[in-house]
Image (cartoon, rainbow, N blue to C red; front, side):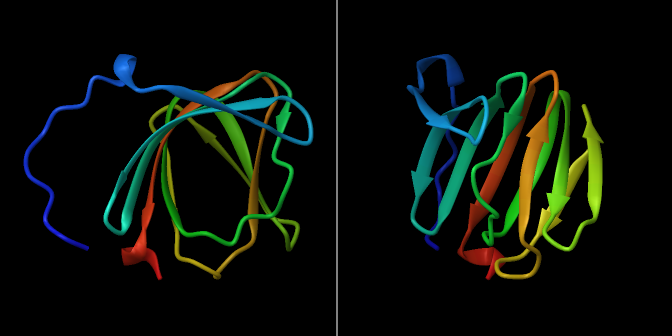
Length: 112
């Protein structure tokens, strides 16, 4: 990673991209830096991720709630104000939400 100079981000100016889930839709607003990705991600009501993710993340639930399911059968409900952290290749996980959720997700080389 390289140093990132001070900057502000107006998320209203960051393009949203669509990513279909097994059901529902994810909308990503993404900023990429060298070795770092910062996203605002919104999952629609009824969203179920279409894969088990191996990537490490820091996930902050900003609005709504969702369940982070682990491939081993464990499940964790996160509500607004809660965070989870996982390193790369440590726990296969996927997101599920009944009513929709808005998340801040940070991932990158520091989670390897």
